[in-house]
Image 1 (cartoon, rainbow, N blue to C red):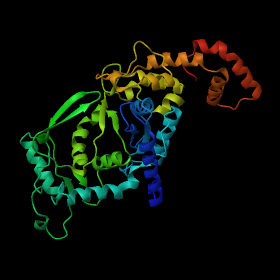
Image 2 (spheres, rainbow, N blue to C red):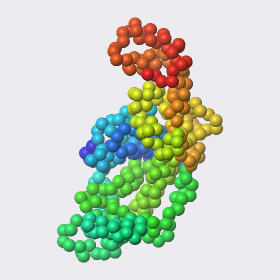
Image 3 (spheres, rainbow, N blue to C red):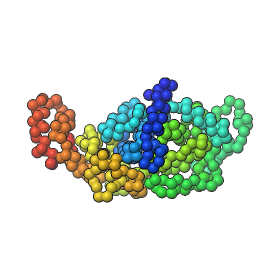
Image 4 (cartoon, one colour):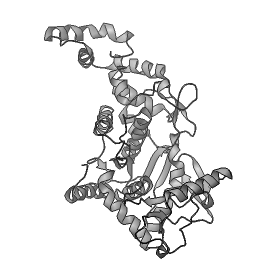
Amino acid sequence: MLGASAAELAIDFHVWEHARLSATSDTGSKPVVTRFAPSPTGFLHIGGARTALFNLLFARHHGGKFLLRIEDTDRARSTEPAIAAILDGMRWLDLDWDGDEVYQFSRAARHAEVAHEMLAGGHAYKCFATAEELEAMRAGQRANKQPLRYDGRWRDRDASEAPEGAPFVIRLKAPREGSVTIDDRVQGSVTVNNSELDDMVLLRSDGTPTYMLAVVVDDHDMGVTHIIRGDDHLNNAFRQLPIYRAMGWEEPSYAHIPLIHGADGAKLSKRHGALGVDAYRDELGLLPEAVSNYLLRLGWGHGDDEIISREQAIEWFDLAGVGKSPSRFDLKKLENLNGHYIRASDDARLAELVAKRLPFEITEAQSTLLTAAMPSLKPRAARSQ
């Protein structure tokens, strides 16, 4: 899909339109469409997997669609192995998305088109400030202990004042007066004064779109109705809403879920065991249903239930059950939960998983013997290694 043709893009739009027409919501006729949009700069992080799970469950609960978008606009850091790792991790956890995955970079022309529409409509402007001028501006702000924010020096100037042929970026003409309130489905009512925001860049001087623009255009074109993502993106919502409003597009419903912390309360990092999903499978020997069940209970609950099947999760899941406080990742609890799923697993399946980890290929007779030994091995096991 990288560098997709017009025909491939047409297929993408057909998938999105199908999603919009065929899904239904229990709150009205408008279909529910969610999405997971990882950046392929590394493995599928455990926090990203939980975000994908919440999006999938919300969509399935409401009879809607769950879409996948690979945000590969950072060409220097996006890699094919990372994309493969993300897709592999999602398939292992049975996070089955609807239609084909969409690659953001292939839609750069569409993103630029919207930027120019906003420019023509007076909702954006050309900024000819040089890198040196902007650095001097930031240096002055730092010296005066002011927020580092673009000062709008080209906001009301005519482009004819710039030297002929000078490079420029296209900036959003963000509202400066008043405030914006988002009724977040998890965080509640959140208000930000417009004076705290600046005129962010929509289109770089080389004509490439910024992440902020691309996300909004893609969410609109994909028909996304509910944006469920980490609360580290909450500020982005306030910066992105002016694009929706400038284009006259319907705004999505937001739900910003708290991040996962380590057992010590600090932001989750590798020292807490924050590995990629593939490591939980390949290095720790965990079962996908155990990881999925554990991720579901990180920040969401249904009474005192701990063991929750995917079918039950779809039936019960809604955003009202998501807490506002960060959840704490505990590898020991995950391993204990994995032990439950090992004991409930088919003996032949477990024997096959164990056989794959052996440094040699076992014979059919050895496989039969290994399977027969499972009833004795399962009660004491926490991993399938």
